[in-house]
Length: 192
Image (cartoon, rainbow, N blue to C red; front, side, top):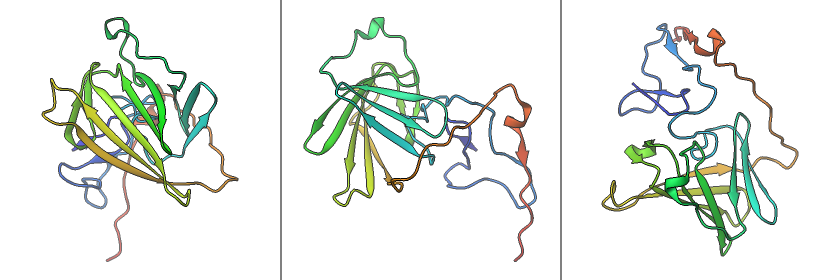
């Protein structure tokens, strides 16, 4: 089995769903409150709602859950990588190209990325956020570029549906010392 970096999604090798038989227990959560590896709360959003909040100098990307991400829009560059401590969100700078928000991030810790890719602090992630013409869908195209790791850039895309205007983010609570955060479930046998 492969566990995604956020510790919640258990996927069989080469598959897309849980690797278990009906009636067998399996782990739903590894108990991690802070996403590990991919930085799931912003670099690699999962199925919880994400919100993009823009001001003159920055875009904040927050979701229903822990963590948030700052994208600097004030024209600054990246700091010297030798002086930057790798973190789950790295250092992000952005600008607009036409109607698309283009964000470049460096300073992420070494680890895996979706689709079998890898990264290190010097790897550059470029994300392109493009809203559909009707405003109902957001596509985020991820391009990981690092000549030490890749022969050509590693690219994939996620699509999201827009929530109705009256929607809002729910707060979630997570205590990684709580043993119920690591509990397994036993799915019931299904009627044929």
